[in-house]
Length: 193
Image 1: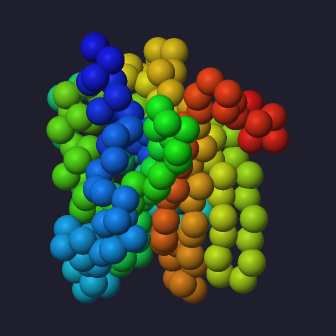
Image 2: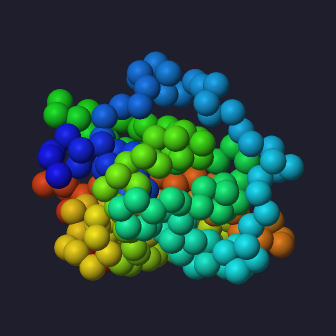
Image 3: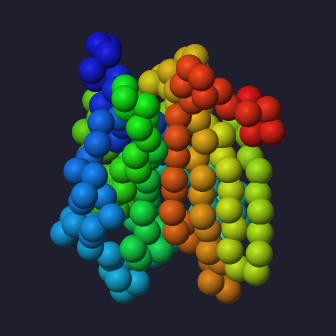
């Protein structure tokens, strides 16, 4: 795989990656038409087991994006995990040293990530977790490892920051915000580094 393909995969796929900006800096804070929130009525029904606990919903996210080259992902399952209006955000540091946030809706992530996940294969698993809770909200730092083949050495590691909500009946993903490890920015020991 060439470096350009690897970068594209790293940017769009996994909750684990960094890459080129998806939109201009000025547009990053403005809602785009492709970022229209899905209503609760339009959200597919979730598998009860997927949303029964914080661990279950995080495991379901990793499971739905993971699979071998050519495998179709269950994007309705992905949609069912996220609260309407949820965001997936990658933090990317450019060659100029400036770090920017690249904000995607769930639909943006699916549109951009699907062809790359199928083309190259992608497996992401959690290597370490820290959790903080207050009332019905939780913040989870989930250290990840990304691979193209299930048992290969990881090509990327980083931290997915999950913001979760328990509505009294089930868990929802509100945001996943991530940054990949890079030279000069190793995973800290307290997060499994």
